[in-house]
Image (spheres, one colour):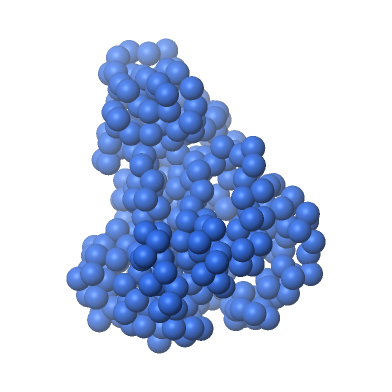
Length: 341
């Protein structure tokens, strides 16, 4: 497979005109040359925090607090999940996964409710999809054993010490929500030495220094935090201290579009377009333990091809800013997955 156009290469996304050569799912060459293509070739996105099960409840719960919406076990989301049939859940997740592919996502990290059955349900929904997934089970260690790790709700909900030990013994990921509503669960979450934290809206100076000292990555979900009215995560301060990735959080609350998440983040915070694109690609890939996330020889070919001559992107002078702040699903020509021949 040969892709031509303006190629955003390496961790700095240096734009070169030329072609990317893909063989057996890997990037084998990047050739700088004059080509007859307006396409923009970028890394496909890694959505570093999702709750796909919410696909049955999009835009439900207007006016409810975060706790009323999603807190286990009786938040609206959990009530709707219990009331839905398995077929309904799987079909709704399939629709969301299809949209994620169409909108440039190549991989994602899912916090999967429902224990063992919840993990099995999303595995079924992924049948036939090309997306790479990192599924973190919840509620039981059995779910963790079936999945790629454990996704904890928050240190105020449970101690999670047993689950952390189990993931460590199994060599699997352990992620945990922290600092979403207030700061009270951040230190207990850090005490667990997780592989990554999610949200950190209410991180204070002590927490920021602990994150820096321990080099624990953080996934931020700015649109979700605004919708639930919990505040703004200190993304600039976090990015100065550790690896930060972007996630879209609950499908119930937000479209799982990384285009929307990047644009919102780029315009809300004092971050360069390159920093935001790293947060949406290679940083998430590193947290997930996946290769790729950047266009470099020897990396998996998880790539996004955009129509640079679309009505939306035509005339863009800075391709990185155009991808981060302007591009949308309608501009996507196709997504190349690392299994592609």
